[in-house]
Image (cartoon, rainbow, N blue to C red):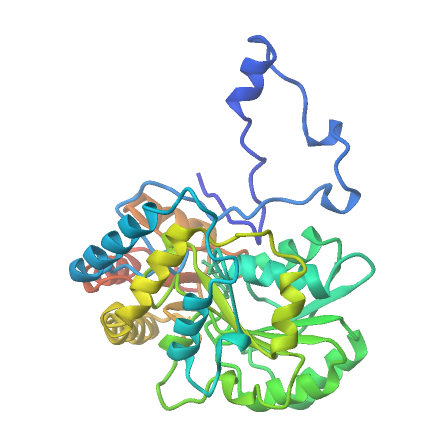
Length: 388
Ligand SMILES: Cc1ncc(COP(=O)(O)O)c(C=O)c1O
C-alpha cells in the first residue's frame, strides 16, 4: 500500500461517512467536481503525508523526544490558570508571547517585530494573504516544502518554481537572475531546505533580496539544528523591510501538536499581517502553552544536540551502505541512490518504519529519531536491497 505523499500522487480524498448518512443511507455520488469550487482549486490534492499507526514514524520531521516532565507540569499549570478566564477572548495582540519570542530570538528584536500563528503554516498563510492573492505570484526554488504551493494557491495567487544545481545547492548570481526573470510578488527561501536538508548561504538571500521587488520570506523551520556558529538570516533583517524570517516550535521545541509558529520582520510587515488574521486567532490556551515552553527554552531544546548526533549517524551509515545522503543542517536526511524508492518505502513500512517518498526519483527522506529508532531504520536499510 505504497502511499506517496502530497508532492506526488496523493490518493483521492477519503469519502466522508457523514455524507452518506446525510443522504439517508444512500451512497452519495457527489464529488468536488459537482460543487461550485474555485477554479484554481480544481484538480488540487490536499497535504497528504500518511499518518500510519506504525511503531516508528520518521516521515514528517517531528521531534521524537517528549516534552520533559517538569516542563509539561508547568505548562499544565499555566493552561489551568488560563482556563479561569477562558470565558473572555484572549489577548488579540498576544503581547506577552511576542515579548517572549523577541527575547528568545535576540538580535535586538522587540515585540513590534514579531508575529505568531497556529504553526508556521498559518504564519506563512498570513504573509501570502497579505502579499500574494489574486493576480500575484509566489516563487521558490524546487524541490522545497510541499505546503508553499498549496498556501499560495489558497490565496488565489499563482505558483512558480526556479531550479537548483544537481546537488540541490543554490548559487547567488544564478538565484538572483532567476528571481529577476520570474519577478514574483513573494519569494520563499527555505533554510535549511526541506526536503533536501541542504543549507542556504546568506549571500544567496542577500542577492535574491536585491533582485526581488516583493517580499522575501526565509523559512528557518529547522534552524536550531544548523551548526551553532552559523549566522541566521535574522542578521540580515536591519535595513531590509521586505525580508521576513519565519520559525516554528514544531521541530526543535518538540511542540508540533501545540501548533505554534512565529516570524520576525519590520514592524510595518507585522501591521500588514493584522489586516488578514482572524481576530483572537491564537487561543488563550495556545498562548499559555507557548509561554510555558519558552520559559523553559534550554530544557525544551536539550535534545537538539542528540538529534544532530543521530542525523549525522544516519548520513555516515547510509554512505557506508552505498547511498548518497545530501548534506543536512536539519533534523532529517534526504538520500539518493535508491534504485526503487517505492519498493524500499514499502519494505521499510512492512518492518514498521514510516519514511517519506516525496516522488523525487531515486530518493527517500528520513527524520532523525531517537537512537533506538535510528538504529532500527539503519538496520532495516542494511537488510533491504535497494541501493542502485
Ligand atoms: C520547511 C517547513 N516550514 C514550515 C513547516 C510547518 O511547520 P508548522 O506549521 O508545524 O510550524 C514545516 C513542517 O514540516 C516545514 O518543513
